[in-house]
Length: 382
Image (cartoon, one colour):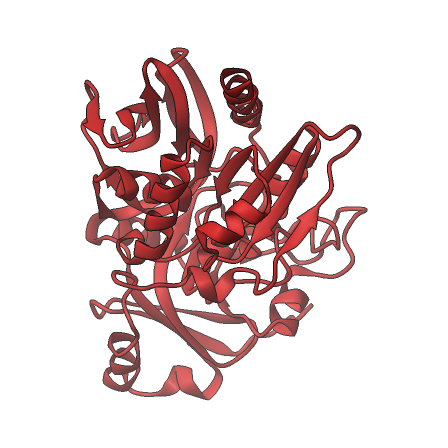
C-alpha cells in the first residue's frame, strides 16, 4: 500500500472543485457523479453493471477494509467510471481477501481519488443534483481549472443515454436449476447481476439469459413459463425496443417480473412516463413499503430514473389494471408496479434490487412471488 500519494483533483460540471490524492489507476476519467450510502458491499457495487459511466462517491468514510476477493463480483468486471473515497483502508483484514481494493482498481483501470471531504461533496450533490464530474491525477491535477472543466462539460450526460446493450451479454446462455426443475424463465439481460439467476436457480428455475436486443421470437424459443427483465444503466426513455418486447410478452399472457430498469420498462410499456431523479437512490438502506402486505423493507437501490405513475388508484391499460405496489418512504418515489387482469396478477416489478448479494435480504420473497405467479398461470391455462 502506498504511503505517499500523487495529488488529484475532482471537478464538477458546475465548477466546484475538490482536491485530494490519487487512488487506484492514475490518469483521468469522466462520468456522472452519484453517491452511495452503503456501509458494506463495495465489491458488489463496483461490479454492478448499472453503475456504467458513473463516478461513485462513497458516503461511508472508511472503504477497503475487507479487500477484494474472487467470489463476490456481480459481473465479469468493474463497471464504475471512477471511485471517490475519504479514508482508504491501510490494509485489508478479511480472511477472504486476495488483494487490496486499490490494487484491483488499478488492475482494472479505474481512476479514483481519496482524502476528499466526501460529506461536503455529498451535501453538494444533494443540493445541486447528480451531475457530470471528472477525476484527474498526477500531472493532470496541476493543470488550469478551465481546461479540466471543459473536459467534464464535453462528456455526454446520462439523460438520453442508451447503455444497456453495452453491458449486457452478447450471446445467450443458460443457468441450470438447483435440484428439480420447476420453471423455465427467459431473462433479458440489461445489466444483470450474477446473483439474480443464482437466486432463481435456487428455486428450481432454469434461467435462459438473453441479450438486451432479444426479440419476441427468441423469448418464445426458450419456452418460458415467465419472463424477467433485469436491472441496467441508462435512460429508460431510450428503451423503446425493450418496451415493445414487453408489450408482446404481455399480449401473449406470459407472467412478467422486472427489477430496476425492468420496472421502468414495465411503466413505459403500460404508457407511463419516466423522469430523472435529482440525485437518485443508491445504497443498501432505503425504506420501501410493499402496499400489498403493508410491510416495510430495507432495500438495496441503484437508480437515477423513476416511473411517473399515480400513487393512488389504478390505471386502465391494454394489459389490465395497473397500480403502484411499492413506494419509497423517504420521498414517495414509485418503487413497484403490478398489473392485474380480471383481478388476477399477471405482471409485477420493483425499482430496487431484491437479489442484493451484500444484503439486505428483506425483499428476497419477490422471487417466491414470481414462482407463485407462474404456478397460478399454469393452473389457469391447464
